[in-house]
Image (cartoon, rainbow, N blue to C red; front, side, top):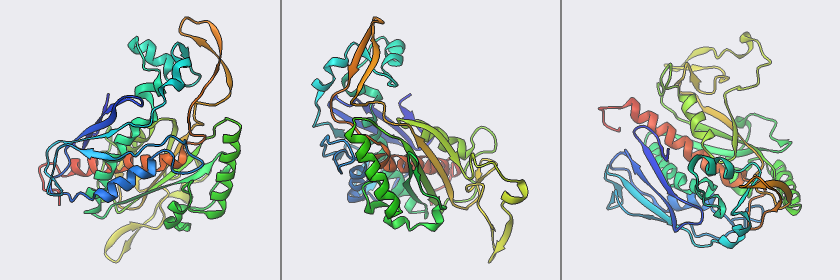
Length: 358
C-alpha cells in the first residue's frame, strides 16, 4: 500500500539510496495557487543537516513538479513530482547486506518479499516521508483557503516535557530553536540531552503535539470513518511512531462530571466551554481545536555494538556506520503536520462530494 487518502490521494515512490523520491497526488482541487517558496520551506524543515542535532547528510531536497500545475495553479489533474537523491553513502551499509538490524524492518521485509534493499533501509527508510511533506504542503495551501491552520511541535524528549496546555504557549516560537519546542528553557534542555545521547552513539525518543485550528464542523463519520481514527492511521504510518492519542487521551483519572465539554451559545454560534474531547465527538469534528499527541520511539540505528543474526540465523556482532539522527523529533514535526493536513483536506473533500470546493 503506497497510496494514502480517499479523494485527496498521495502515491509515493522511491528508496533512500535510489535515484529519487517522488509521488503522484490525485484529487487536489483545481485553482489552488501554488506557493513554491512555501512548499520548499516545508521540505527544508524536514531536510537533513539543518542543525547540529540532526543527521549530517546533506540534501538539497528541491522538489520538481512534472504535471498538474499550469500558470501557478493546480489544474485538477494528477500532480507528479520528484526530489532527486544526491548525497548517498551506500558503502556505509555494505556490512549490513546479510544482517538483520535490531528493531528495523530488515527481517520482516525479507520474509514478506524475499528480497530487500539494505542501503539505508530501502523503502522502509524515513527518507520516503519527504513525499508526504510535498503532499502536505499542497494540502496546507488548499486548507488555507478555508481557514484551517495546522501547527506541530516537540512537547517531550525522554523525560523532559512541557507541563502546560498548548494554549499557554506562544507557538510562534516553535521554529526559533532547532528542536522545535515553543518553550525556550525546555528546548535548551532537550537540545543538551540530544547532544549528550548523540555523543555516545545512542538515540532517544519523545512526543510531538499537533494542533489543528479552524476545522469545519461535520468532518468524519460516526462509525468506521471516524476522523480521529483516520488521524491515528495517518500518524501511525510514520516511521518510528509507536502511539497516538487525541484530546485527553490516556489521562483517564477524572470523573465524567469533570471532563464533559458543556455547550453554550457563543454570540449565536454553538461552542464548548472546555475541549477535553480534542475537537472531535462521535468521530466527527465539532469546530473546536483538534489536538493530538504522537509518540516516537528512539531511532533504531545506534552507533554502538549490538548482537544480532545473519539471514542464515548465525549469531554475529553489529556496529552501524553512517549518518543518522540521534532523535527524529525535530525533523518529524513537519511530517506530522503534513499527514494531518492531508487527512483533514481529504475528509473535507469527502464532505463536499458533488459540490464545489468553496
